[in-house]
Each structure stands twice: as structure tokens, then as C-alpha cells.
Amino acid sequence: MTDPLCSLRAAHEFAGQAPEVGGQLLELALERARNQESGRRPIHAFLSLAEPPPDAWRAASRSPAGSPLAGIPVAVKDNICTLGLPTTCGSRILEAYVSPFAATAVRRLERAGAWIVGKTNLDEFAMGSSTETSAYGPTRNPVDLDRVPGGSSGGSAAAVAAGVVPVALGSSTGGSVRQPAAMCGVVGVKPTYGRVSRYGLVAFASSLDHIGVFARSVRDAAHVLEAIAGCDEHDATSGRQEVPRAAALDDVDLSGAVIGVPGEYLGAGLDGRSRRLFKRAVETAERGGARVVPISLPTTSAAIACYYVVAPAEASANLARYDGSRYGLRSSGAVAYSEAVRRTRGEGFGDEVRRRILLGTYVLSAGYSEAYYRRARDMRGAILEDFGRAFARVDAVFAPTTPTHAFRFGEKADPYDMYRSDVYTVAANLAGIPAVSIPIGNVDGLPVGAQLMCGRWREEQMLGIAAALEELLEYRHPLTRR
Image (cartoon, rainbow, N blue to C red; front, top):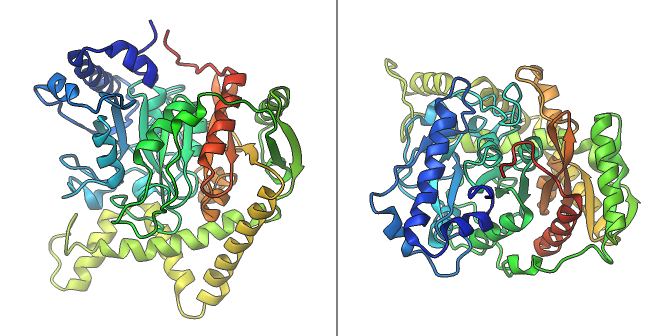
């Protein structure tokens, strides 16, 4: 029997038409979550777990008829606000903080009949690429417990990869959905900026933040995206474009698709075995009927530098609100307000968050804003123009998601080495275009992913190409249950 928590279809086959079995899906997900948290070497994907209502099966029976998410257990990254569960952002400064409201994406999931199982671990305030900077300890990659799951949404990616939940929400500022998806062997979707409301997503860098989706398949991710997408009066940046329909993926193939492969993504920084897997995926796309052409994205080499000016600058402003006077941690013993703020932020923020706040404050300071921040904004415009020229020629851009597969804990102690983990993902965030990572194979049993990027608001086109390629690749996850 197929594992009922590996896909939406398997979950519905397990539940059938009996509402009491729908409640059992939630119990099964919670049991698995508790088991993986209590072992000798826990994955530590979750920071908090929900308590199921005593009449869960009755609540399941009230789920919307025909909804693909009815009765489905879902995990939510712990920087997305929920009612009744803490929203800590992986930081001591928000330890035990419970939001008085739920994010729009969470409310829409629940309206579609989904269950929130718990909140997942993350790099503190989503600042990291390995989930090692969480104040509550790192998450382990369920494929290899000695390796990182990627970040910053490592907990959500690990929860899906481990079979705790079939789908999960994460967030992406510079690649924090696609990168952990690639390292854990699952699908990760970052939609167009504005496709999904950011209301209830704790701000890191407001012009770069996205809520994204993890799943075992492109189609499952598409169902979640359809449920959470759409305009929201609480978010002025949310778009009014028509919501992408998962049904559009029912009959897809690659015939006639023109796919561009940027040479800048295949340079010396890409692991050789990952390059071979990527080239095999390109050949698979061609056999499936796609026309693959070489393209150039010249600003790729500047994307990391641009990101690490823009993102910290916005973070330094957004995180100024954590001063101990309104919510979260407040240091005791200080007499003057200034001393209380200094102590609170010093005790509450970890090293990486402090590093980025300092960097952001520096690039915004008098005498340096023109030299750094304005130039980074100009480069961001050039990156967007690069993609615009590419999408005038091709339907989608296809590239590796990460330079390497999942690395070992502590392997990237140098912050610069860690930042380069996102070298292939930051450009899509800077441009605000949709992108999806799909697994394309394994190296020594470790997953490797590749990403498709399309023009703004072209999620249906992007997911259609991704779903067709996914079928042709026939990827088998190392932890697949039968």
C-alpha cells in the first residue's frame, strides 16, 4: 500500500469517504512527527506540534466537498503566523510568542480543509542556508542525518521528505524554498512576488519575501498554491491576476516548449556529478519534445553581491521593531531604555542575525548608501532586464538549483561559503519571477535538484513544464515508502 502521507492522492485513497479516517490522517502525521522528534538522533523538523481536537473526525467531515486539501495534514514554517501555536522565527527574541492572528495563507489552507500539524524549524529569522542558525538547534536531513537539509526552510523540507506530511509551507527571500527542496529531494515552489499574500509572514526583507510550497510532486504543490494564492486586502503588494489552476496540469507534455539553459549556471562552482545529472535532465527534456537552447544571463555573477546588500538593508529596518518594549524577549536589570534595548537585542539575536543587521545598517548609513544600496538597486533592475530578454526567446529557464548536494554540519563555517549556497537561487527572488525546483537524481544517495524559472505570473506554464519533466525523469526518493 502506498504511504498515505506521501501524496495528496495517497491520502485521499487512505481516507476514502469515511470522515473518521480523515481524522486518522492527522493522528498519523502527529505520531510520525513525535517519533522523529523523540529518537536518539531526531530530525528536529518541528518546533511545536498542534493538539488534535477530540472530535477530529467530525471536523474532517465538515471539510469542503471536493477540496484536494480536505483532511490533509500540513506543516507551516515558524515565521508564518498561526493561531494557538508559537511563532518564534527560530529566535530567542520571540520565544513562546503566539500571534493574535493567522497568516492569510494559513487561513486559506484551513478554509480548504487542511490541518495544521505544527510549526517547522528554520534558520533564525530565515537568515541562513542550512537551518543551523536556529536558536533551538539544527534540523537534520532525513536522507542523511549527518547532513543539513538546506535552509532557511529546512524544517518544512525535512518534514515532507521524511513522510510526516505530504505538503508544507515555507518562505523564500533568496532561495529558502528551492534550495532545501533540492537537498531533501522534494519539490519546492516559489511563486511570483505578489502571487501569495505576505500578510502574516514575519518580515525579513519585504521586497524579496515570498511564501512558498513543498510537496513530493509538482501537482501536489500546484494544489496548495491554488488554495493560498490570490489578492488579499491585507497585503497591498498582492496581485489581482487570475489564480493558477492545478487542473491545468492534467494533460501536459513538453512538445513545443522552448527551454533556455544559461551558461553562467554551469561554471566551475557546480559539482561535477551534479552537472552530469543536470545534463541528463536536459537530454530527457529534449527527448520529451522540448527544444533546448543556450542562453546568457550576464548579471548572474553579481546576484549574490546585490542580494547581500538589498536583503540586509531591509532586514535592519524590519528587525528594528524587536526592542523588548512591545512583544517578545525583554532583558531584565537595565535602568535606561537604551540599555534595555541593547541587552534585549544582544541576548535575543544570534550571530548571523546580528551580522546581517550590522551589514544592512552600514550600507544604509550616511556616506555609504549611494555607494552600496543605490548601486545594488540598479543591479537588481539589470537582473530583471536579463530575465526579460531571456523570456522573449524562451518559455522557461532551466538551471541547477544548488552548486552541490547537501553538505555536512559545520562544513561551511565561513559565512561567505554559506552565502554561495544560494548562488543559483537569489536572482529569481531579486526579479520576483516564479521558480520551481524538482529532484532530478541522486549522487551517492543524496538528492540533487534543478529549477525552472518563468516570466511573472506564468506559474501555470512553469508548473506544466515541471510536471511533464517530472514524469519523464521518474525520480525515486531515497526514503520512498511502498
